[in-house]
Each structure stands twice: as C-alpha cells, then as structure tokens.
Image 1 (cartoon, rainbow, N blue to C red):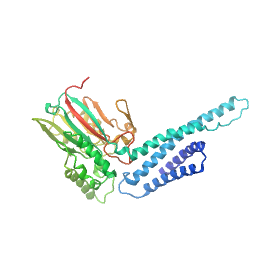
Image 2: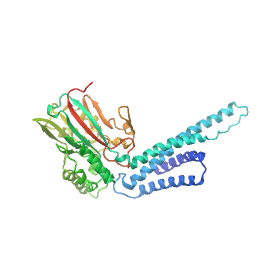
Image 3: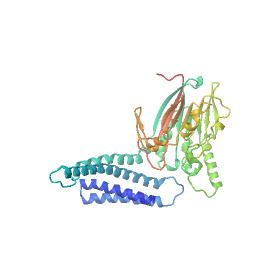
Image 4: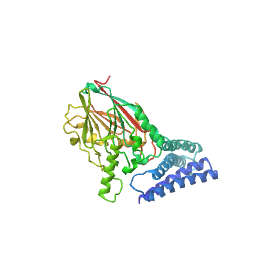
Length: 408
C-alpha cells in the first residue's frame, strides 16, 4: 500500500511538472531527455530499495539513489505547487468570465510561458542545492567557536578549550582525502581536550576498520574522550545471535581504545590542573521515543556533588530536556549530537536558523541555555541516509570556558 501511495503521488506531481516543460518547449529531444532522466532516477531507486542489504540504514548506492530521487522530487514538487496555483487562478478567471461576461462562456485562459519559466527557475534552486550537498556539502567542514562563562569555574580552568565532534558514521564515508582534511582541521585547533559524542558507525564495528588509524591521530593535551550513540549498539541490523551482537559492541569498544580514545560508559573522569578539578561525565545513549535508553546519569555522576564543575557527554539531546537540565547535581555544560541538524536547513549566523528537525527536537543545533546551564548540539562530522548536507554543514565545535559573568 505504501508503494502504491508513493507511485500515485509521484505520477501526480509528474503530470503537473510536465505542464511547465510543455509550456516552455516542445523540442522532441528535450522532452525525451526529461523523461529518460526521470525514469532512470525512479527505476534506480526502486532497484536499490528492493535489493536486499545488511542493516536498515541507507548507505552506499541506496543512499545515493535516495539523494537523486529527493532532488528530482523537490524539483517537481515546487513546479507542481506553482502550476497548481496558476490553475486556481485560471479556474477563477474562467468562472468570472462565465458569470459576468456578455457571452457567458466558460473557457480556461492558456498557461503563461513566463510563469512556467519562473517556476522552472525557482524549482532549480533546491535541485542544485541537493546535488551540491551530495557532491561537496557533506565534506564542507566548519569550525564553530563558542565562549561560555561560569561563575563557579575553577580558576585553573579559566580559558580551557574543548573541541567536540559527533556522529562520525564511518560506514557512510567514501573520500579519504576529505575525511583527513576534517581530522587535520580538528587537530589544528590545538584544544586542551577533544570529545566525541557518539555514533561512530552506522551498523557494525567493522565499518571503522579502514578509518581507525586516521582517527587515532586525533590528539589533545588532556586526551580524547568518547561515548556511545544509538547506532553504536548494532540495533539497526539483524544479527545471527545475541552473542554476535554483543561481540560487535565489544569490538567497537575495543576500537575506541585502539584509537587512544577513553570511552566513558555511565562513568566520569576527573581532570586536574594546579590542584583544581573539573569532572568529565559520560552517559550511554538515552533517547526519547523508541531510542535506546541505557544512559544512567545517577550512576555516571555517583560521588560528585552540586558544587563540582561538570561537563557531560550525552549523545541524544532529548536526555537534557528529560533529566539533565533539572538534575540537582547541576551539570554546567552538556555536549550532544544525534540530530545532524537533519543535514538540511537554512542558517544565517546570528539571524536565522531553521530545519525540519526542530519540530522533533527542542535542542537541535548549537548552544542553548536554561537555568544557567548549557547544552551544545553538534551538527555532526559525517552523514547518514541522505549522502549530503544542504545548509547544515559538518561541524567541529570549539568551546572555551571562561570564569566570571558574560559581558553585557
């Protein structure tokens, strides 16, 4: 039934989209090319979708098939909306003529070539954006710098700098040169600590095998710390046995150690400087809805009190809303990921930020503050399903901790 609905929807927007093309040109070869491209994209998507694969995550050829279909459908959908709007106008004009003209005839005005040309131009913008996002945007790494002020930050940590990456999704990678650039860019920040906030892979620990040497080159003065994300548990693949699934997770944990990353599993680590300390706390994944809920904040923070300065790593930002921000132990700064900013949106720094994912997650990209407690939701280092990024670029967050009040 879902396939029938999808095909009917596709055909409906195809009918309207063709109206715009027909109004602009009747060149035989242009029309043939239009339908060949449409048929190729749609057929490839069906083939890739119906071909059995390991895991339920869109990757590789499946992901590209989805990306090309998305670009074509956005193009046709925008054409449809504009052409449908013109049809409403034409019906109104025809009805007005029948009611008020002397002849009393009903006739639809012909389609306007200018409007069809305008519709084509407008629809080409998201088409080009999606194709650019697949070709270049997914590796368009950005460093975003933030400075956060805390009255109770230990003096020795005034000016302490953390770098955060999240959602590597190594099973989606296909360009070693670009990934190396991102890792080098991270190292160039020369921060005191680097943290990774989950989703190292899509389905299996083996996806990280070609990349662990490269990511093992990430260094920081106080080390590299990490946590697990929902994809790291292997929940999106059918395993031959519970033992095989457990072995996969054990292998993934070993991979963190091989890369020199200190994996925090509902536990914390004290970082010392000049006799003063801050606590780095790491919880396992906890996500609202149907996501895994292995995170245990009480266990991770056992032995800490409300006066200890704490930085918390929690993959899914919904845990911040559910428990962290209201916890009596006062978690000063939480670092999360998971949302990817949906890999699609519009951002004008300091002015405007929008993505469809904001209707699912209250905290979805960047810094948020409530009750003097902060969360940074990293937009992700890699990509998943859609093999690209449009407007929401891969991110390296650099956060500087400062003692005192935020300047007015």
